[in-house]
Image 1 (cartoon, rainbow, N blue to C red):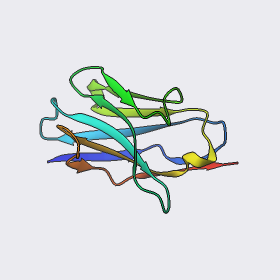
Image 2: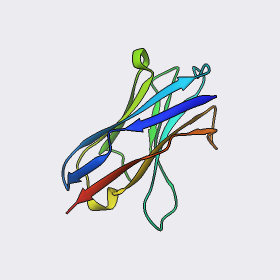
Image 3: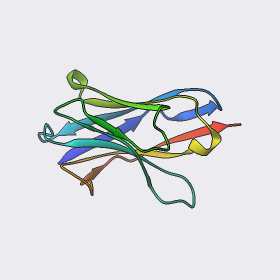
Image 4: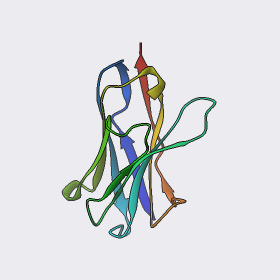
Length: 117
């Protein structure tokens, strides 16, 4: 089992920044991929970014490329999502997920991000 716990969500004004964190624990996840998703009310879950735990390769959806950055802290077993130039349409519950490949086996409980205009 792998446990994922997100943190860092909150209320921010449009144009502001937030950094989300995903603490990863449990069985060995060295060959895992960790990803960030979000889901806004009434919308489907949307892929945002992913990073390979054993390396530094990362991938982004076109909707957030250039505004969001995914990174990891191996010492703290944490994956971050730095979000900047936030827009009201970025309002959603943000989830991290992990697994060897999509569909991801493990999911966190989510953290709410609200961007006010």
